[in-house]
Structures are given as structure tokens and as C-alpha cells.
Length: 378
Image (cartoon, rainbow, N blue to C red; front, top):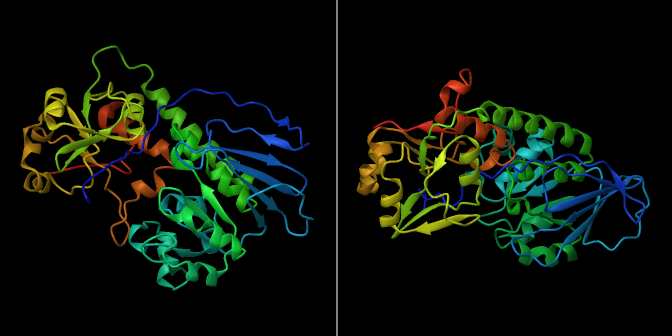
């Protein structure tokens, strides 16, 4: 499935205003979040309460974590885990967590990660090559004994895999296992705002907030550049690839469809509901998108020739014939890990700018594509 993109890095931007801080019934200060819906932050005297409201899609339960400064008496709260600051040794289990460490300048705290092949961060690779990070195997908790032996101050878990099954074992071993549900967010800046979640875990909320503000400002500035597009037809866009007998493309409510909209594109499948990747018949795709001007998000192919060889039917599309096919594979790690799937979730501003540059190059004349590249014949 190397060339199958079943999800794309995009969400619809809902305008929102920043609420003022408010006090909760427990006497804690509730820290307002502008876009993220999946977690909350409350601040006390020397401690924080972070609650993950949407740990996975359709979840009916939440998880509450207490983060306490060193030397502070642990308050009495019913929580699922307690993190004691400072956090000096940590494990993360998804490449999407790695940019949080890089941006917060806490990469030195990373002591374990599963499957180095997926990593693109140069900072992390420098530590890997020095033997300072342990490879935990092909799955995040494939070797639970290795995790326990490392005795991290906490491990961050993504509920996209089998990690959830190991939470109780980690709890019994005295290792706080924290669920990161960022992927459930239905807003590009909402997912990016999860850097504040990680910031609290390092005692760096203020730094995380400043980082997010910079990302938000960049994103909104990019939106400003396309808001005055004239009412002429926007360029039509095809996305997705064939896998076996179905064409997998971003659903109309997904990041892919909505950010293409925001970037000034006319997405071919904008009436096909879905928050993730959806299967479409090849006949339907031909009917809708054979004349699309652009093909954006054609997995990680490296050339048009490769696409043609692996799937000859691709060459009937206008975008393919006119060589207007773009993939998100411009930047890779030492073992082929795509930076798009690592950094892109916390830097949606770069994704948005890439798409604007592709569809409306005159609007960002001095900007160079970051994640995307145009495929050549060879």
C-alpha cells in the first residue's frame, strides 16, 4: 500500500474567536482553546489538569491527567495518570508527535520510538545515529518490556494503533500513558493546537502557545491571499489513487477536501460525504474528474512514468496528460519517511500555502513549495 493515500492532511477552517479565561467550579483557571475540541486545559497553583475528551472517533469516555510541578504536593483529583515535572525521559509513538518535541526544543528527552523508518526529523535522526533513542519495534508497544525498562516519565499513545490495549500494563508499571487524540480534530488549526497539550506535559505551555500563535497567524495570512479571488470558475482538482478495485479519495468533510476549498480549488468529489478517505468506483471518478485541471495528492509516486507503469489507466486523465500532477513526497527522511505525514499536522499553514501556490501561483510569488512537488515524466 506504499502508493495509497487513505487520508490527506487537510481540514475546513471555521472562524472562531478567542474566549476569555474563566474559572471552573473547582476553582481552577480554564485555559481557552481556539480551535481544538478534543481536549481541555485547566491550571491550578503549581499544577495542570488536562482532559482528553475525544481520545478516538466515537469515544464515549474521556481521560484526565494531572501534571504537577516538582516539589508541589499532589492535589486530590480523580485522574487516569499523574505526570511529575520536569519531564526528562519520554516516549512518543507517532511521527506526528515528533514535531512537538522539535518545536518545544525537547527532542533530547526522547528515549524510545517504534519504527525508525517513518521518521524524517533531522534532530531525531542525529540522536538515533548516536544510539540515544531505542527502536521499540514495528508497533508502538510491540515490546512492552523495553518500554518498562526505559522507565520514561511518560509515554504518549495514539489510538490509531493497538497501543490502547497496553495502558493498564503501563499503569501497573508506574508509567503514565497519555492518549493523544489529535487525529479526531476536524479543523487544521485544531489539530495543530494539540502542541499545547504537549507543552503542558513539559511545563512549557507558554512556549507552546507562542508557537501555535505563529502557526495560526501564518495560516490566516494565507487565507487572506485567496479571499478576493474573482468569481470565475476555480481550477478543478482531482485527488486520490486507485487501490485494487476502488479509488480512495478524501471525503467532502475531510481535511483534503476542505483545505483544497480554502486554497481556491474546485474539488471533484465535494459532494461525497465523509471525514476520512472514501472508496469510489473507477467509473464514477472518470465521469467526475477526467477533465480536472490538477491532480493533487496522488500518493507518493516519484514520476509520471512510474504511475503509468503501475496503473496504466491513470494516463487518461487530463491532469496527467498535461503533467499537472502533484505529490506530497518532496521531503523524506533517511529511510523514506515522508515529512508531510510528520510535520504537516502541526504546520497546516505550510500545507495551505503549498496548495495556493499550486492552484494560484501569482498569489504567492515568493513562496516555494515545501511538502509538494510536481511530477515529471521521469
